[in-house]
Length: 394
Image (cartoon, rainbow, N blue to C red; front, side, top):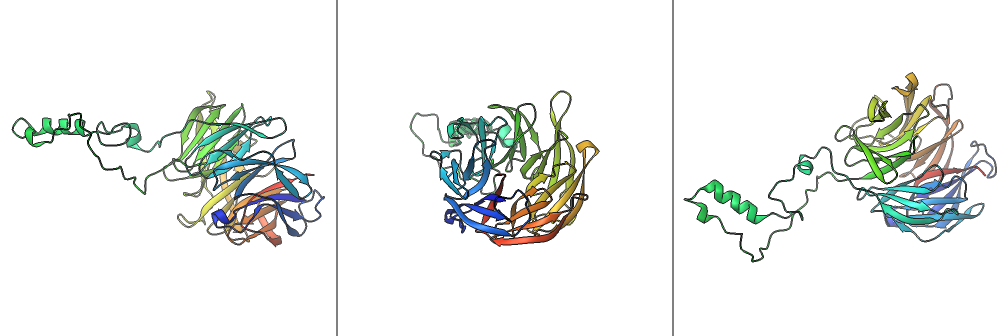
């Protein structure tokens, strides 16, 4: 069977030249087993780091990460694609896109500036008007909720207000020593220097859930944001510094979110009033290390009994059991992925495919359906800086 393969090109220090083709076994077969082969470049594109396929049209969408855009490509042959319209700007370092049920909308997330963008889709799959949705603030920032009175709207110091406060504090005897900034003459102020360690919004993932809602993760602000259409209806704050990265919607009605920095999986679900809450959490594995390991992708098995998480750093794949109807998670196993920096993975039947971003390869491994544990390495192929996989069921 075939896969579209996303990757980083030279603009992001990668070796790919666009969207690639990966073949497992016989190209036209539906079985995922068989030797892996990199089939070359289907279409040239600038760092198509994330791919998502249209559910009914022979169209695939790629986030052009460095360019801050998304672009549609139509299949023109077994192993070829062609642009379907021009790229659409969607925010600095756009890194993820997802298609709504019904395929009327594409939603993107931008790592660089946190922008969440809704893009209309035409009947033929082409991209339409892009609408940037509302931004957010850091729930852990006291300053964001309580800005100092001496800060003007543009972020510069309001010297008149500051001087008045100083004169009042100094009293009549020394008030004359405080410069008078109440005159209309322009006063030159120093530029505000941003703190290099300041937290910034970093949109990372979109997941469509039940009830016409979708959820987005903000890795920088430790937020899961719940949306209906263009309106944010709720925010769920995860622990500060956890770094929610990707999420998967589970048949039990839970949204499982993997955190890049704290190495955990959180389960979220709405209560009877529709308010989303954290209902469970578990470490990806007891064997991973904070500051060394950085979980990347999360997926669920078709039967919903297990979750898989690829972990960069230790270069492993974790298996997590889903228990008590989704309300409880339990770490089961952590095994070698077989690649360096396992950026993405997909599970097809009883075979998991893992991309090695730094080792420039893709591997396939068996998965035990009884335990969910990833087993022996089946096949490997060189592939240039791979970052995402989309299976094609021809």
